[in-house]
Length: 165
Image: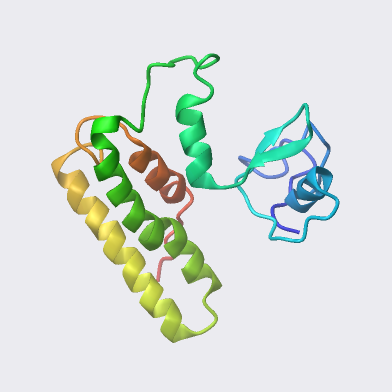
């Protein structure tokens, strides 16, 4: 079923019911958008409430859309987290942050055997150490300003719950 929406605002801290469509699961949204959908029911989802359809479900594309496509209604339209002079550096960071951290936590969570878990956990912690080393020298990954790479890292770190032994 994928992501499950709570029934009330207070049922699950930080989660809200689907007030637009009344969907109980992310699968219900995918099926509302396409009766014949047969793929995976993933998040994030950028939803068009007027057309009742999924505009996009790829996180990298969605973050780039948010950077430019909504500037006419944005509170701070001059904010650019994918500045042209930093794009090469941002793309390089995004590459290892995605594989080592964003996707790494999922690989750890879905590992069915100890050996593969240990390998992806090692890669995850190496990537986290790399981020920590960068942050010892500067506030943001690309220097003194917030970029897309920082946002992509943050959305995983804020949900990352290290198991204590």
